[in-house]
Length: 170
Image 1 (cartoon, rainbow, N blue to C red):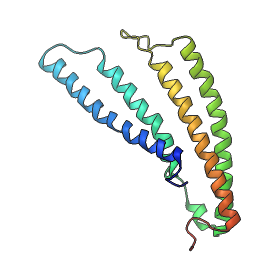
Image 2: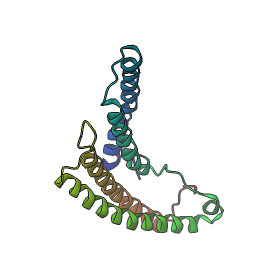
Image 3: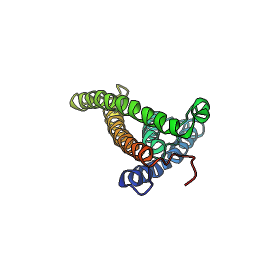
């Protein structure tokens, strides 16, 4: 998928911005260590916030990697296939991924909506609405990945039609 598509540019911008949350996790964890071991006043919010930030990065990482098809693959059999067959295998993989992601998007949206409707919270001393936030974010990211996969399917069909496969000479 081309980096010029609006979806890809949006996903990369959000992913790059979200990556700074890892630095924030380190900073607030260092703050917790200082407060706990130097000042003798541990916090009650650092752990929960760190988990929320890490989960946010993890969920956003799916669409980020999927945008450029840089996810982990087992390519041994694929690389042994003729280029024409690779194109068809790639299309089949994209179609199966699309079906999976459509079901996942539906299920995640139902759960996210229920979590928001019931104002689902962590149940901790802080009782933040993190489950509602994370479930909603997961549903959004699954929907974005569905759109990305549909774009991959279109790209795969076009490559088969033109007989222009990844790895082939132009």
